[in-house]
Amino acid sequence: MTSEQQFSIRREAREQATRVVVSGELDMVGAPSLEAAITELCEAGAREIELDLRELTFLDSRGVHALLRAREHCREHATELFVIPAKARGPRKVLDLTGARELFAWREPSD
Image (cartoon, rainbow, N blue to C red; front, side, top):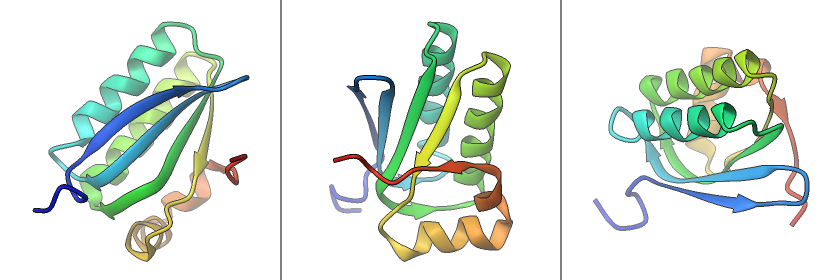
């Protein structure tokens, strides 16, 4: 695995939202970290989260499940969740094939 493929999460404070940037491969290794990060933000009272998938290179069923759990946590805490689409074709295709793409509010990046 190259360093570009390793999973990582970083947070960026924005004017109106917290942006959570997901990089690398979102699979069974990274999924718990994503769920924990979103849960922490929601429980801390975040009003809006942008989940930035532009740097995501791989997505499997466990990753899709983590995205759906993130959506659930946001709903439970009245936090708006917007997703910035992945640049890589693979993750976009997985979301399309599973039907999960239709469940999210999509946003083009402002930067």
